Image (cartoon, helix red, strand yellow):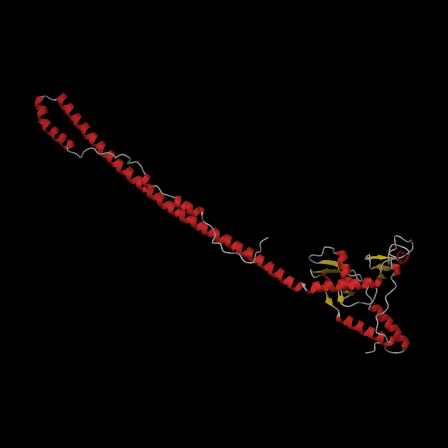
Length: 337
C-alpha cells in the first residue's frame, strides 16, 4: 500500500504531515510501540505515558492519574497503571506502513536517526560549557567527552549516552512488562485472599450469633430450673409453717378450755353453797376428764425448722461451665510465623 498519492511534491508534503501526526507529544519522536490510546482519544507511547504516570504518582500502589499533555484531560488509572490502557493497533499499523515506505525509499532497513539531544542534556559539573553526552560503562555514570579525554574517566570504557539510554530503557520496559504479565496469578491470589477474608468475617459473625443463642438458651434453662427449685422451697416452707400454725391453734384451744373450766369452778365456789356446787361438780369433772383425755402435747422436733435438705450441689455444674470451650480442630493454610 502506497500512502503517497498525486504528484511527488504533494506526496512529500503529505508524508511530512503524516509524520507530524504520528509524533508523540512527550518525547516528540514518532510513536514507539506499543501505543496506548487515552480516554480522550489522544495517543502516547506507553513508555512515555508510564514516565508521565510515575512522575505524577511516585507511590502508585492502587492507581493514580495524570493529565493528557495534548488536551489536559485527567486520565484516571487503576492499579494496573498504564498497562491497563488499550493499545491503539490502528496507529501502530500506520507507523509500520510509514516505516516500510521510508525504508523502501532508502533501500535500507533501519530506524530513522534519533534527534540531536545534546542541547537537552545537562552540563558537566567538571568542565564548563560541556554537555553530558557519553556514558562510562566502567563507573556506571554519565559524563562528558572531556572527562573521557582528560578527566577521571580517561582509562574507562565508554559508550554513547543515547545508546545506553535506549538499551537500559528497553530492558526496564521489558522487565516491567514481565512483571505486568506475572500480575495475573498475583491478582487472582489477592482476590482469593480478599474473598476468604470476607467469608471469615461472615462466618465469625455467624459464630458470634450462634454462641450468643446457645448461652441465652443455657441462661433460660438455668432460670427455669431455678424457678422450679425456688417453688419447691416455698412449698416446703409453707407446708411446715401451716403445720406449726395448726398445732399452735390446737394448743390455744386447749388453753381456752382449761381457762373456761377454771372460771366455772371459781364461780361455783364463790356464788353457791355446797349443795349447788355438788349439783355442777359432776358436769365439771366430766369436762375436765374430756380435756385431759385430749391428745398429748405435741411440738416440732429438733431441727424441724432446718431446710438443709433442699440444698443444691452446684460444684460439678460449675466445673463443667468453667471448662466449657470450643471443639477445636487443626487449621489448615496457616504457616508458622
